[in-house]
Image (cartoon, rainbow, N blue to C red):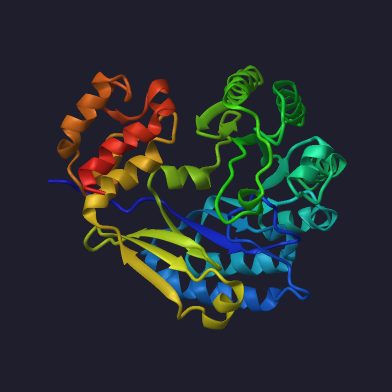
Length: 385
């Protein structure tokens, strides 16, 4: 018989405003209104948390992630209010990882020390490029100097654990320029680097008016040379676009990829919760528009059960993003399904050198990661999707 166990629990908090909407961004983010309703929004976050807290089912929060948008536009008092409520209503693990996304703007930098005192112990700073002309092309409001200053300010504020975001495949970017960007970012010595390719998504300004991007051959060269550069600098790739020094992986994101549970509060936030009584798995989503969220929280709260037939694909879409994959026992313990039902599919993928040969792990090979969509299609066929 399969068995299930409640997985670790995390909390995602969405702050939906930015100073300006970037032309490549398809996240649920909105340009700042003339007066940002910070206090009203925080009140809604607390009501949302109170409404969903029972889904914790006795578990403490292993991590909290303030994403956006630009969460660092909020005051430290607002962030602290959410952290205190989460601790009082659910409970924080003694070593909980608490991340806040920040941009290198002057206002946010002034708050770094206050965020640290409020309980934030990890920053994720959106650098994106260290070339001013690329920052302008991306619609960013900071400069190279702002970015460098933000990293130094973070260190002075007491953050020794921070991530830096960097894009590649930027408009008309050459291999040399991409590697210069990455070399300079590595020289800043972050604990973690998110290095990912710019893609053109629907419902963005770039989709309507696309820039000229590097061709496929240049993109491949950038990826190969950049990964080698990061390896040589002591950063290990553990997920598609995530690289870290030893012991500095993002625990919050790792929980997603290991098919852990998480509550999501805020406009447009999503959650995933396993029910202890029957092992069913549910997803939640909150209304996207900030004004609607403020007006309706916590009544506008949507939960839907994930059909059992969809769980193989849902599980594999997450765990196969990890270079090391997950222990095979996670599949029955976190889905309630028999691993034996996948035997034929897993054996075929192993024969094709797409999954690792170790029966105790579910992990893609380097070849499997290159053709990950084909691997996932096998599990999609099983669900009939």
